[in-house]
Image (cartoon, rainbow, N blue to C red; front, side):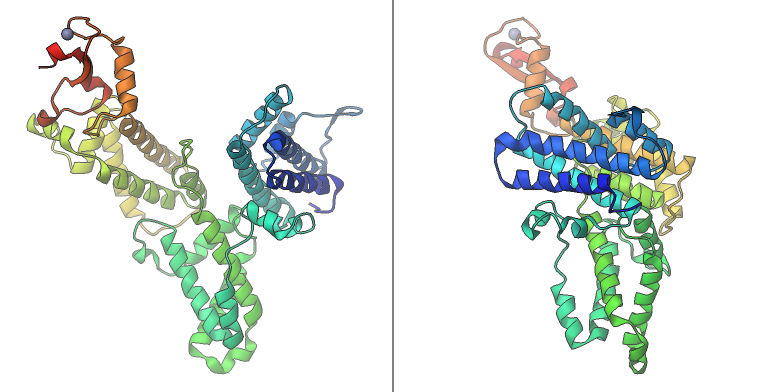
Length: 441
Ligand SMILES: [Zn+2]
């Protein structure tokens, strides 16, 4: 696809214009940022269709809607990154057009950032173009930086490179290895087996984080590093310059991925989902590690009761918590068994990176997300906290209609633990009721 086609150019102009309006810091203009962003997406998707030989006209002088454009694109099996956010944005555009007032700076920036991400990925895959470079003709550096498109400064490597290309390449490759490892919370020392990084880079390219052909570039980079390390006599045969560029490109891609949140506030788990596209095994490992981090933070007191009553079926500490969550209705009964299965599969596949998905990995990944989401809900509901949170207080008061559960009085009300904390009760909704001070003892 061409980055010179009129629709493409207009789309980029609108995107750039949206950034400029936002940067002018006039809240009354936020709605125009949103309108421009939505229009920019519409144009780029339509350009993509035109390029595939699909007409965007339903009648003379009337083009298809953005919703039809989206489904046509998907019919072509072209992936639309950030699709849920795009849908939200289009919906907001339609509302905004028919209403007074303006969206908040936060909402506007949220869209700006996400849509920039969409453009970055989409044009990288479809047009082989880099958004930050394309935008240079429309925006100044500050405005490009505003939407997070100025990559990390690699001045250090560049300086070192002037002194010694060999030293710079050796250090850059070391940094790539370290960064790849730090991308994942779980300890990946045994992952440092041959080919691990190669496969990961390939997966990054496949998901639009790196341009295609990176695999070959990386082989050259590794060769350069080996020469730098052990055969100084051969250094004239190496293209040091392009090796450093490759290294920097890879470092930027890794940093981009590491800035994607693990668990975003919308409960989308987009980091895990991105990882899942890179490698189902890695995503499941990371998800299990996220689960364990959460489990570690959970207070175990309510579990003691189960243990005393020997109702914990002889489970390990983590499984006990999941079992408890099932009993409380947050998870299906078999969740702790699923978890045991996941752990086993993860152990068997440790260090194995393969980007192909199958029904088993889809199912495993679904279970991981299900557990994470249930834990989040349970923590939110106060199941594991000793203290009663304000939110829970409000819910319990509303449920008891502001009256003592025992006598119906509405004077001097307090929140009461049905099973006391000391006896293993929790501060979750089910273990709380409203009583008057007379009945609190
Ligand atoms: Zn009472």
